[in-house]
Image 1 (cartoon, helix red, strand yellow):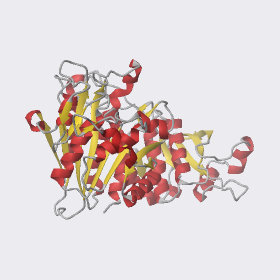
Image 2 (cartoon, helix red, strand yellow):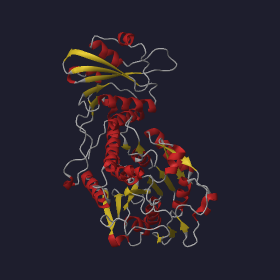
Image 3 (cartoon, helix red, strand yellow):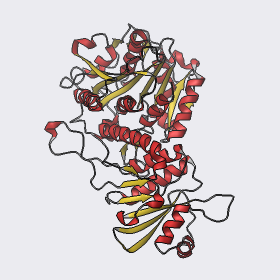
Image 4 (cartoon, one colour):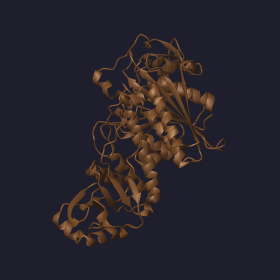
Amino acid sequence: MHLPEPLFRHSGSLVDANLGKFNAVVLLAAKNEDAPELSTSAFAEKTLAALGLSFETILSQWRDYVAKAGEILEVPITDKGALHRLYILGIGNASLEDSRKAGSALGRKVKSTGYSLLHGFEGEYDAAVAHLVAFSLSQYGWNVKSDYSKSDMSAREKGATSLTLDSSLESAITRAEILAESVWTTRDLIHTPSNIKNPAWLAQQAKNLVKKSKSPALSVMVKKGRELENFGGLKAVGNSSPNSLPHLVEIHYAPAGSSKWPHVVLVGKGITYDTGGISLKRPYDLMIPMKSDMAGAAAILSATVAMAKIQPRVRITALMMCAENMVSGTAQRPSDVITQYGGTTVEVINTDAEGRLVLADGLAYADLELKPDYLLDIATLTGAATLGLGKQHGAMYTRNPALAAGLQAAGERIGERVWPMPLIDDYVPALASNVADFNHDASAKSFSAGSVTAALFLEQFVGEQNWVHLDIAGPARSDVDAGESIKGGTGFGTRLLIEWLANLS
């Protein structure tokens, strides 16, 4: 479960690089709106001269080329050893977003070629990280190995392309490798079919990742069976699948001497498959992508493990609330009343609104037992969030403006955007129940706003914590194979959490 190695290299000054050692060389072209001509770097000019070319000569043959982000000119090279391609890569105005677009376009251009590229990227740290991560994520591919007995993750696409860059980018390369590895891991977990992936399997992957890290700061504990006696939501959902019972996976990042550092608790929805339960999903094709309903749990696992490399001055507890939501004789029914962790009773109205039940247990457990300074949950929770914000933003709910601002800024930097949404107190009456403390799907009133009312339900379990809820149902899945993502799970939330946690201390 790792990137093809090494994906990125740095090697002194590119000016001194031996072009004949590479299959292709990438040169940048930028377009400043205030200047009429395209601009290139000194390295680009020197490289073109060594190849007997000039930027002006190339542009004279492609007069429509304007160096917009991701626009690529491909120039064949002959009689230069291994070198047989020159790419002129447009980076637009070299903004973060344009650097990201250029990275994914280059990655898709050379995907599966196995090329070794000399890449003349120049830019600030954040732009370099965005560019390199986009390149690596566009290289991602997934397929199932034939030998399921080993419960292995996936087989990477062969022929991944490597980049050699200037040594001045070493720190950006290091961070990009951590981010890319983490998102690849999240995507692997998401794309694994649910006939392989169940709560026990997901718990084992958490153990494997912690062991592989070889970090004394990381540990993992798994609760199951009688240990979940007080977790009424997790049991109500997960007991619908007798052959794959629920698990609570608790991962800790706690370096020596960290007891006085800020404590962050992350709670992730880990529904390894969601049929909707007795309230079966309609139409049935809505079930096809439901192997990805554990994307929140996968994101917090990958982000927490990444902390062992980044080493921020925060303590982290990640709670993966893992269950299958199936149709069986032991499945919960509409009208059941369950008792969540901590004693709050909930009337179940729609068994397809199961994610908030398992999250409520995790949030209450965190509030009552773990004493967090920050409490964050992340889940593919509601279709309503997608209707409101589309596929490009996650919905963010919190009553802490500073916390919202920090997460939003981290998302803008790293390319996983979240948008502040309102917790509308006027809608709380929709959670009323005649037989329990609350109903869980806001059916008592017809307010609509399904993502808002789901967040209001979760808020009942967080006490006085600095809490934020991320509904990532939209950006966690891609309907197309384009840009940084293949069709399927995107790994959204992984980069956002890593960036936020790394800058929290």
